[in-house]
Length: 173
Image 1 (cartoon, rainbow, N blue to C red):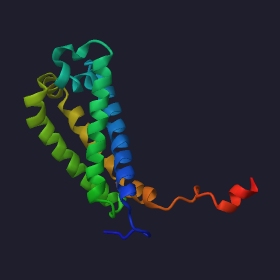
Image 2 (image 1 turned 135 degrees about the horizontal axis):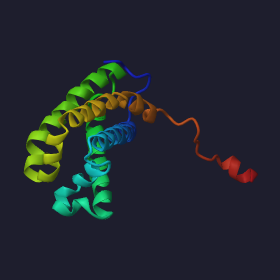
Image 3 (image 1 turned 90 degrees about the vertical axis):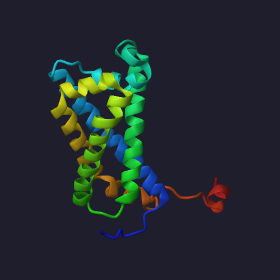
Image 4 (image 1 turned 60 degrees about the vertical axis):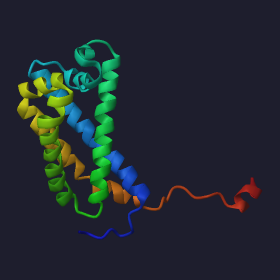
């Protein structure tokens, strides 16, 4: 482990974890949607099918399932990012990227073989139609999580742009 030049803070872990989760979720969603479009499944299908856990077959119609699918995807990405950042806040980006790939592959195994078959059979069928795309989307998610230590450190730094107003500043105004 590499010691940070200043201690990480709870704010840094939370902000960095949520940020890296959102970033990794964005990379994963974009890759998966582009892969689905090229495979002829449909660009928005992966996001819509995330909401099939709530909407079932009707997830493929309307705007609400699309919004709910995006919300579910990014909420889970933030939670996974936060958990990852809490454990790897002091490592290097390379170590964090390798650990991120292992972590993402554990998520892939659990999601593919347990969660989706039990709770979202519609998305489970689609995942079986694009196994390589689904696998590599998780690898990309993990690689992107490698930015966690950098973001945690950045968000743990004391701010240089903000200072509390001094009473003398208020009297001068």
